[in-house]
Image 1 (tube, rainbow, N blue to C red):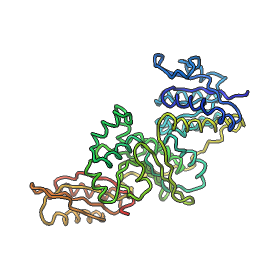
Image 2 (cartoon, rainbow, N blue to C red):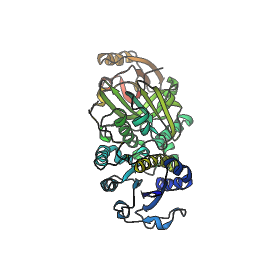
Image 3 (cartoon, one colour):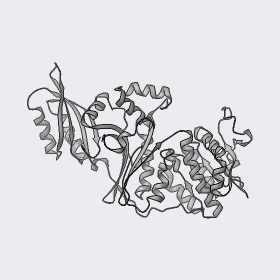
Image 4 (spheres, rainbow, N blue to C red):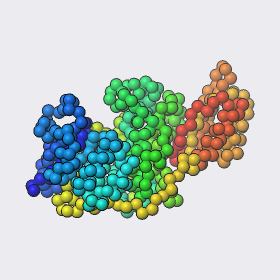
Length: 431
């Protein structure tokens, strides 16, 4: 045939972007893959939803069988979201020997291994570039361009909502609560922002990236997660004074044949490349033993950036279909690495505590840290008030997290300590 036939599952923001991009860039896409890519059917669930008038109504179907059991469909693109229903549709498509592309990070973070194995059994491919960081081509880069490296570290700003909130807090001195209200009003945050602000969205993405980068299986449930809801204006201010900015980072490490996977706020030095990534932009920093340090930057979400990643996968899937080289993307995990518990991770910490303003307080605090093997890199007394309460801010050297947590638990029991108010990890200590 002179064209390749595609079934599109989902017509929300991303699905609409995929359709528009495929029409607008038809000539260049056809030239590069060798055949026209034509969307034959689009599956939607809501019959009453108003849709873009540019999309022909005759393409719309409400019956999944029109795509999944249709021998005239060669490739299926899933951009509907959800997990259970998408899982069912993708399994049916692969079992029917169709190439599959998905943007579904929730699904891939939980079931990528099972679905990739099913694709392999049926001589087909599962592509999911759009599941992480929108238009940034990071998954293909890790799978192919950096495949010859031993990846030691992957660290990124992979959620635009939280980066927008922290950027506004930093630049304007506003509280988390005030900026969140603005983010919802502007459409940068959902009305229920839990998945973003609690770090769940980023955790799914670092699970996907870590699985590929470290050649082991990391699922969403393996990732340690903290969000940004406890970050205060004072934390932002002290970070600035100490030479840092606060970012929510997804971090994966491959050390001594063990893997780390975590998402949490971080004090990151102002001279680190990720420190300058602001607003809704994403960036992913990768360290390999051959390539050294590299960083990938761009828009991590949105109609066209995400559609760009989907179309890139579609062009790969189409070439493999045309050349009968399907199934070539499969990679089997040979060895599963142990995932470190967060208590065993080595990191530095910023902590802020309210203490009684009397002589000898810091000596007692330092003694507790010393007893737990924690060395202090810097310390400042920030203020004292008329009630006899002072505030101490300190940064530790890098040590196992368990040592710091045990220290702080003991410090809170000291009669000279009112409260430990903030505990935030510090990337690579003070620069």
